[in-house]
Length: 261
Length: 305
Image (cartoon, rainbow over all chains, first blue to last red; front, side, top):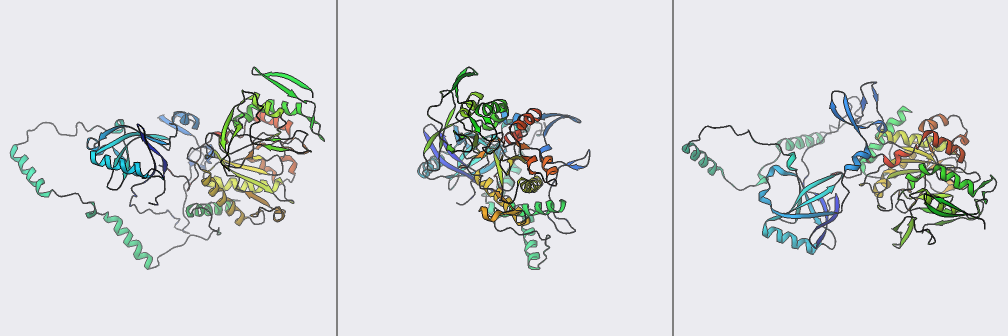
């Protein structure tokens, strides 16, 4: 697999330590658009504006405030935030094994794959097989970025997946959703059971696709053929340095800097 | 050899050759040097803290031979903090950490006028806390040419939502720092980013900036050295003295000083010597504090969750 590694470290429990890399498991199918200036097709950028004096605020003058009431804030500094952030860690420490069926889908946050690193292939394969056979998943705490996540490590068809889970305090209650009272008559129940039974089938996600996305892609292809392109104003070339996005952004910034000097 | 025993924070230190003139033509002795670092300790220590120090020692003064010392001398007092670091050749060496006044004075007693430190801390040697642009003028260029380039960098970085800070090198150049202070930063990222920035500035200001490292080509231009963004490189620490004719200091400037300086044409105004350094720091505080506390993310490069 050649996916970009988001994190690398080891899965560990008891005496087991398996070197792994975390990679993306999903790529949302959203077609994203750049915002352009209709007059000259320059790609637009976001700026922080101070409404008080209508000026653009430079990054070194931006701080964080927690709003506690209209116009009232508690200022939190980078250091304070740092002091409550978890230490970065190189391990996914499995604390317990659970039955994945017990985890309601409401708890699922975001899925990733875990890929074995060099030297860990054998232990990785063993863990995948045992987990698949026992249908168990490892529950672990895992620090990434500045947050500590509760995660489930489970087997998939071809390997291991890591799914970040919501903390229970994040889950909103579903009580009071169910309307109270009114007996349901047995006859009605049976009728609905029958209807559902008729509609039962195996889950086949490939039957479904994002219709709007497909239409947008088709539209883009069609316009491409018609050469319905517009071009942003020329900025001076740089030879291939750094990733394309960075170079493009630098060019835009450079153009603005030169204009304002 | 004359010796003097002093106590600092309860530690006993034997200071030697205090009367020795280390900046001979200026009349600046080892006692002056120790006094400079004593007064500047509260400003320089946070920037030295937990970084593998490279000593640059001038035992016979700035006009004579010097030597670099990466290993912490084995005759060090037991209370000098050290760290184990891996060198490029994989060999592990013990380095000094200057985390307190007594260690700073001990290091200066070794005539280590210049204090050089990496951009990363010893316990996370692959994580740079900042990205740096080392502006190095050619033979016919001076610090004012560097100031013009520094201002372009400031504007460009600011347009990319990155705050930057500037200090004199203490010699002819300027150093522009972009604080990052994020555990996710890598030298690979800072190298890519700084290289792309250096190249676009050079392309757009070819009369001011050269892409060539070789001195012969630089002449009246400035070289933006981005390759300092490397785990194996060190930078002169802010507030460190420099070995030259005069005891100049690598000292932080306010951007408005550069805004005001580029038209005037007196390069000396941007050169800060020891006494000015002390009075400025005591009056204005640590202008470089942001470099070690401000958290910023390099756009387009660092992976996010």
